[in-house]
Length: 449
Image (cartoon, rainbow, N blue to C red):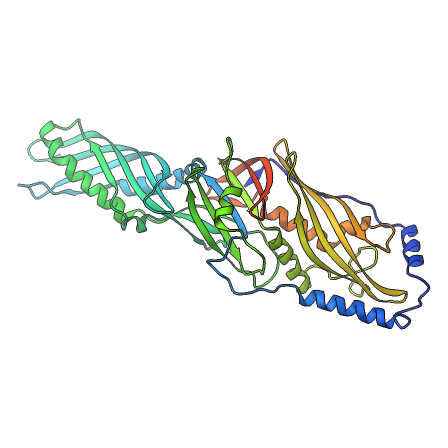
């Protein structure tokens, strides 16, 4: 999905010499961990306890509460589906055969250059059913005894209730399918058609027989068609799995809701509350949502696997042998106002092993997720410490665990999330909000060549 523009920036300057001097003076006159052995033991124990408390990959639960979600209004589904459906259906309806007619051995016929104009709308036949309605036509030719080859324009209507299904596809995306093979359990398509240019007696005879053949052909030969997919963000870690866990049509907004669950130990959203959070307003046809806890667990996993630095210098630079160890706790979401949602990444630093003392501190990276004139931005505004012994915390805004958190959040709501079938998707975002525990982005989407 190509958005009007995602930007992400971090504020703050590097910690200067004055900050280091102030930090050193603040650490009392202790000369090493030996002088503060009890304190160092305590700090090390607190760090180890914090790491043990971090979640781990678990079993994938297809029935679990969604951690990522998407809503597509039916007009967006129509845009994505029409081209692939029209191609599949016209290929099916471009055929030739023999029409059984009483008193003959059957009449050879052909349907050529078929055309379709379709629309999908929600159906009450099942939770994920759509009703495909529209006009169809083509050029009909038939060999009639004595008369010879006769031709007529073919005009009619199609009305077919088909369930949509969802699953992971070969691209690793959670994809939505027009599941025509499953439709036969709900009933055959209703087909009407006229071949009025034929002699009336033959038209009356051939029309019902031809419609039966078309009906059977649609029911038996239209393949399962991929309409669109949700591209999961790249967490960059091993063992991560995901599955669709919610898929339904929301009658209030005439929209499809897709929920996705991972095997990360993070909270999900109740289905009823999620429907309200993804409710689309006037002029909106796409909504994307992500649980902040999923982002936190993704970064924690990356830190455990060494993909994101765990150890730093006191000034926030990753260092393999750095004395300062980091853990992240939560990504708190504030109240939305003026199309902006404040975010606070809470983390802890544990300093031990340095020559001049051991201590721990609580930190918070404050950001804002904003939408302005169709552009989405995620701006880091400041980093602050509670009871900090560091005089200047600005440099910690560039710490790997902070930037990875911002990057994963952007990826979950970015311009490559919704993937059409050989179509691009553009989105002009106009609203960011929080609901059902999720951060939610909404806007107007359109298909592009």
